[in-house]
Length: 83
Image (cartoon, rainbow, N blue to C red; front, side, top):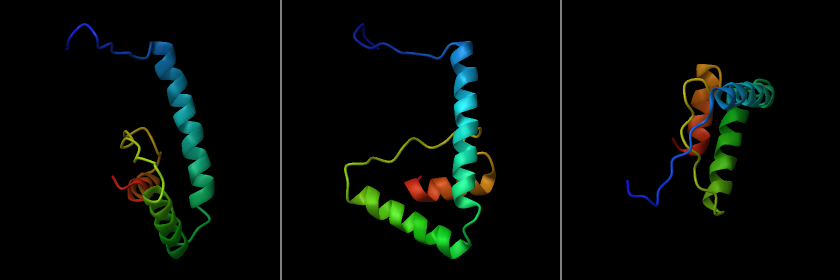
C-alpha cells in the first residue's frame, strides 16, 4: 500500500454493534423466507436475480459465517446474490 490508501477497522464497540445489526437482519430475513415453500423461495430468488441483472446493483459481499444465521438462510442468500 502507498500513503494514499487508508484502511478503516471497526472498534470493539463497532464489532459488537455490527453483531446486533446482523442478528436483526437475520431475523428479518427469516421472517420473510420462513413462511415460503421451496417453490416460492425459488421464485423470490429468481426475481431478485432478475432485478439485480436489470439494474446497476452489484452483488454484495458474501456473508460471513455469523451473517444470515442458519445454514439454510445463508444458502438462500448466496443463491439470491449469486455468491
